[in-house]
Amino acid sequence: MIRARKFSVLLGIALAAVMVMGIGASGAAAAKPRVAIVFATGGLGDKSFNDSAYDGMKRAEKELGIEFDKVEPQAVAEYESLLMRFAQTRKYDLIISIGFDQADALQVVSARFPNQKFAIVDTVVDAPNVASYAYREAERGFVVGAIAGLTTAKKGDPRVVADKQIVGVIGGMDIPLIRANVAGYIAGARYVNPKVQVKYAYVGHWADPAKCKEMANAMLDEGVDVLWLAAGRSGLGGIKAAEERNRYAIGADSDQGYLAPNNILTNGMKLVDNTVYMAIDAVLKGKFTPGINLLGLSEGALGYSKNLVPADIIAQVDKLAAKVASGELEVPDDIDKVEPWLKALGK
Image (cartoon, rainbow, N blue to C red; front, side, top):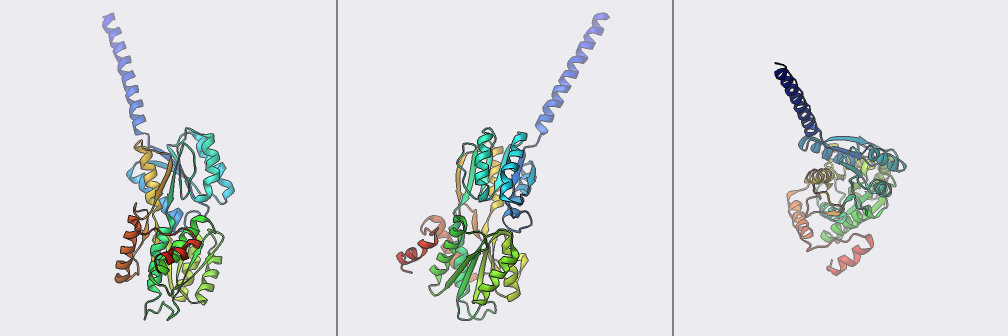
C-alpha cells in the first residue's frame, strides 16, 4: 500500500514535470519573431518612403507572424542612440534601418553588436552582420522621365503647356542617390523626346513641403508641365502646387495618385514594402546573407504606375523598361554622363 502510494506520488511528479516541459516547449514554439525598425527622419505620414516601409512591416506581421517595434527619429543625430537601444535588448531577430543617412550610425552599432542581424534599405553598410538593400535608382528615373518626355509633347491636354515641352524634377537632397534619379529622368525624357528641356533642383530637406511648393511654383512659372517630386514628405508640397495649377505631377516611392487624382500622371515606384518584407523573410528562413543586394526593374523593386498615362505611352515605356531590365540599355547614373550617353546612341 505504501509502495503503491509512493509510486502514485512519483508518477504524479513525473506527469507534472512532463506538463511543465510541455508548457515550456509550447510557449517557446508560440514565441513570435521580433523585428525592430528605425524609420527615416521624414517619419510616418510621408505617403512615400517611410509609409511604404511600414506597409512591408504590416505585411510581415500578417503573413509571417512577426511582432515589431518602431521608432520615428526627428533628426539624423538620433539614429545611433535609437539603434543602440534596440540592439542592447538582444531580443530582435532583425533590426532594420530605413534610409541612406543611417549608414554611419549603423556602421558603429553593428560593430558593437556583432551577433545582431541588421538590414539597411537604400544604401550600403559594409559589415559582416548587415544585409544592405540598394537600388539602381537611375532605372526608375529613366522610365518616369520617358513618360514625362512623351507627355509634354502631347497636344490638346489642358495640363500641358502648349509648345513649350519643359519637364522638371525636384529632389529632396543633393546626394548621389537622388542625383542618380535625376540623371535617369533627364536621360529618359531626352531619349524619347530630343526637343524636351529638363529642369532640376533640390529642396535640401525631406520634410519641408512649404519650400518644395515654392520651388515647384517657380518651375511651373517657367513652363514646366510635368514635375517629378522625388523628395519624401517635402514632395507633398510640390504635388499640391501642380494640382492647384492644373499641371501634371509624378509621385515617388508609393502610388500617390489619391493625393491629386486628376494630376498625378504616374509614380516613380520604389517598392520599399517588398524590400522590407524580403529582408525579414530571409532571416526567418535562415537565409540572412550580409552584403549588397542591388535591386532594380528586373527584380520588380522599381517601376512606374499607370495612373493617367495614356495607353500608347504605356506601350512605348513598357518596351523601354524591358530593354533596361534585360541590360540592353544601361542608364547613366550621373548627370554629367547623360549627354555623352545620348550622343553615343545617336540621340
